[in-house]
Image 1 (tube, rainbow, N blue to C red):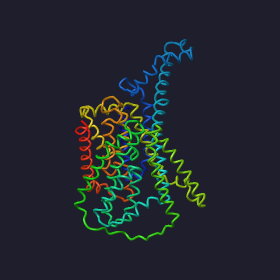
Image 2: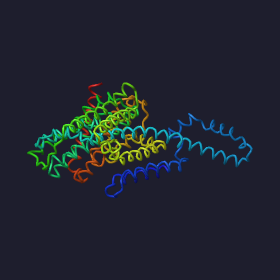
Image 3: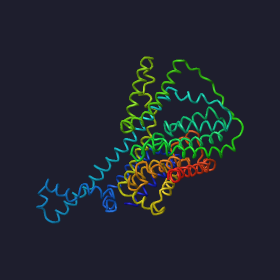
Image 4: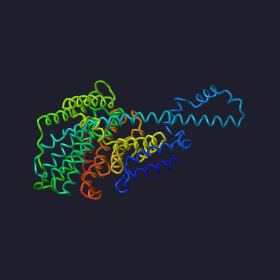
Length: 481
């Protein structure tokens, strides 16, 4: 069953990676995969719940089997009056209940709670962004871009993407910026090049911010990193991972752009004021979430639903006064929120939770420790490269399950490993276009070919990835030594 769970997980991942070829949405695959992993776990629990499974050992220490059995026998004294064979059979049934209590009542609910924190955070953030977009707030930013220089534009877009991704998230930022490209760049392949750099910038921008990427959100919510430390440690390496590819690519971009024709739409002063309000209030709301966690110690999802509720209340009041509440209420906005993405994360995090509880991730950590002699940088960089092949969300979730926080100096809160993991998982996904949510979004919006990206962008992403890693090493091993 141990091998079968790995096989099913790999097949599920292959279906997710090939969703465009198979015409099956990755959310459906992920949901089925998440449920199947727990079903297989329950079926094969006898061979998975062994003494090498640390989670199972910890549970048996908290709730010893002997004590559990004694309490069950007290509840039903008639068991002791049965024949030896019947008594043994009855005790085996009690032991199976003991195992199921661990799997279902303890571990599955525990992981559901952790997963729900991430999902409700994402739902709140995506709703706030959708409200801004509904009021055309992002046009305030995009309308200020007037340059026609190829080189200047790619720098402007990359820098703007980098910082927008840190405040919003890399997926949303990529959608906004790639949509903007259709208004700025006419040539398809040149637009693909710009889209590729937007993916790099979005992933780099998300890596150093506690709210910029799902992986950093997971590490932050889990208490593995803190907002101040991750910003201070990863800002410069993330900048390097973006700037180096930009410098290299700059040698090939010359001349001016052919800009698509577009009719200008006049916006009334009242609409203009509402756009500005929604943009600044929405971004300000998102920025308040880490502030609330830092000073009030509120869980990030709690801060997110607080600012969402306030934003919802204010916009509803405004539209009631304007008389257009029916068309512009947040209820209408919710229909445009990317629910399949949230369901995808639910499925994939559920599947990873099954691998963690069943002992697979601990076994993987032993393999990595053995292969790299417990070298933090070797393990972190490998996870980053792997995140270009498979989604970085399960990889980070897996690493969180593989290594116990505080076990070594590098694994304490804000330790080198967790910070390096945030950087590598965030930026490593740019190496292949299917390696990150931002890449998949750009691929879908612009119909970018996998081979084209591999040929023109992957090598730039790889250079930037290792350049940022070297910068991180210099900061931690040399300057801070």
